[in-house]
Amino acid sequence: MKLLLLGITGRTGRLTAEEAIKRGHKVVGIARDLRKVTVKGAEIVEGTPYEYETVRKAIIGCDALISTLNIFPQSQSLFGKIKSPLDSMSGSLKNSIKAMEENGIKRIVLMTALGVGDSASELPGLFSFLVRISNIKYAYADHNVQEKILENSNLDWTIVRPVGLTDKNDNLSILHNLKGAGRITSTISRNAVAHFMLDCIEKEQFIKQKPGISNG
Image 1 (spheres, rainbow, N blue to C red):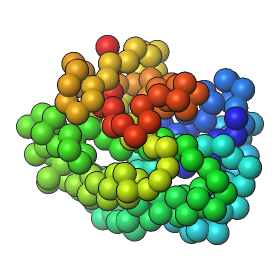
Image 2 (image 1 turned 45 degrees about the vertical axis):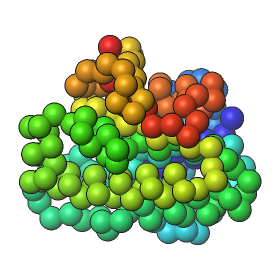
Image 3 (image 1 turned 90 degrees about the horizontal axis):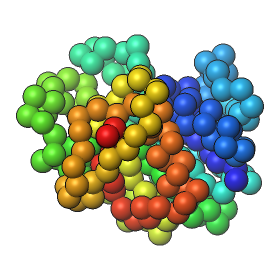
Image 4 (image 1 turned 90 degrees about the vertical axis):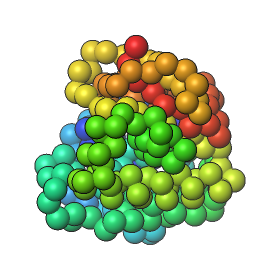
C-alpha cells in the first residue's frame, strides 16, 4: 500500500512513517525543509500541504492518507505568537479531500485530539483550562473545523482522538472509547498512536467513527 502522510516531520508523523515502512508500505511525505525529514525510505515532495498543487503532486498513486498535522511545532511556545496560518490544518485537509476525490482515493485517517468536537466534555477540568488560556485553543479550534469538514465528505474517514501524547514509545497498549463509552486513561505514547492509525487502515477499522484512544 502507498500512503501519503501529512506531518512527516512531526514527532507522531515520523513514527507513523517509520512504522508504515517497517510494515512494507510505501510512504510519501510533504516537507518545506527537506533537511528536517529523518525518515529513511520515504519519498518526499517539497512544499506544504497548505498548497493544493503540492498535495496534488504528492498523492498520485497513493491508496490512503494519514494526517498528523498540528498548528505549531514542538519548539513553539504554548503562549508565544503562532507562526502558522490558524487554518493550516483545515486548509490542508480541504486540499487533501479535493486531491483524493480527483484521484478516486477514499480512505483517510485524521489525528485530532480528545476534547475536540463532541468529546469536549471528556477533557479533565485542568486541561480544559489550559486549552482556554494557551495557544492550544487555536489547535483545538482548527481541529473542530477539520472534523466537521471530514464528516461532511464522502470519504471513508476515521478521526483518531488521542489523549495526552508522550514519548514513552515502548508502550503500545491501546484502550479506546466511542462517543464517550469505554474506559480510557490520560496519556498515550506517540508510537501507540502510530500503530493504531496504521491498524485502522490495514484492518479497515473505525470507518466513519471517532475513537478516543489512550494507553492501557
